[in-house]
Length: 465
Image (cartoon, rainbow, N blue to C red; front, side, top):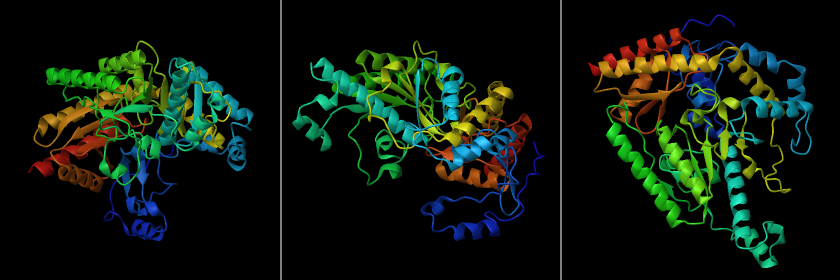
C-alpha cells in the first residue's frame, strides 16, 4: 500500500478549494450536508485528504460505509479487472438475466459469509431498501399463514374478486411490524415506519401505524449499572409481551438492531436478544436483525448477533454499507418464491458484487476479524482512561469491536469536541443527542488509535480548563 500522507490541518476548515467545490455543487439537493470534498487519489488507508491538502485520520468512514480504508489495493485491483468493466457497462435485470459472476457471488455468500442458518439471500442496492424488502417478506409469509389458518387460500390470486380489489386499494391487511424506541432502520417510507430515533427523519411523512416498545439502552460501565440495566431490560421485555398481547395475531415481524447506531450507540445484553427471539417465535412473528451498520466484521465477528448465542438463527438478517450492496439473508421459512412477489428490476448489482467479494477476501486474508477484536478492545480501554481522567466531560465509553462511542454532557459540548478534534486532524462523527460515534476502518492500526487518543486527551484537557 502507498505510504500514507502526513496528517495535519493546513488551512481553515473548510478550506478555499473545498468551499468553492461545495458551492459549485449546489444543484445537488444534498449539498447542504456536505462537510468536505476529498481527494480520491491522494487519500490512502485511514488517511482522508481534502482538496486543500488537509490530511485527517478518518474515524468516521462515511457512517461506517468504509471498510478497508481508502484505495485499498485489493479493491483497486478488483475494479481494474475486465470482469468489473463488463459488469459495470452491461447492466442487467439480474433476477431475469445475469452472468456466471453473479452465480459465483451468491454461491460464495451462501457457503462462506452468510449468517448461520441462512439459506437464501435477496440483494438490492442499499441498506434501507434491504430493510424494506425483509419487512415485505415477513408480511407476505404472515399473510399467507394467516389465510391458511382461517381455511382460506394462501395464494392471494385465488381470493374472491372483491378482496383482490381491496388489496389494490390498500385495504388488504391490518398486520404490523414491532420495533423499538430509538431505532433507525432507513429512510424509505417502509423502513421509516420502524424508525424512532429523530423527529426530523419522519416529520410530515405518512407512516404505517406500527407500534414501538422501549429499548434497554444499557448504562456503562456495565458492572456499575448492573441492577439498573437488569430492571430496564425486564421492563422492555414486559412491554414487548404486552404489545404482542395487544396486537395478537397481527404481528408479522419484530425488527431490531444489535446496537442502535443512529439512535446513540445504545446496547442491550445477549440475554435480551434471546428473550426477544423467544417471544417472537412463540407468536409466530419473524425476528429481523438489522445488521446494515453492525455487520461485515466491524463488531469483531462477521455478524454482530454471532456474539449473542441465540439458540436458533434469526429469521432474517439485513445487510448493507461495508457489503457494498444491500439486502437480506433469510431462513427457508421466508424464502418467497411466488412469481412477482419480491421481484425488482435490478436486484443485484454485479459490479458491486465484485467489490463485495474483494472486501470479504481482504477481511479474511488480512485477519481483520482478529484485528478488530484486539484493537477494538484496546481502543475501548483507552476511551475508559479518557473518561476516568475527565469524568465530568466524558462518560459511558462503550462498544463492540470498532463500534465505539462515548457521551458528553450536552449536544453543544459534543459538537465542540468534534470541531476541535477535526481541527487537530481527527475526523469523528455524532450520534444520538450527545454521543460521539467512532467508526474506524477495519484496517485502523494501534498507532492510529494512539494518535486519536492523543488528540482526544488534548481536546478534553482544553475543554475542561
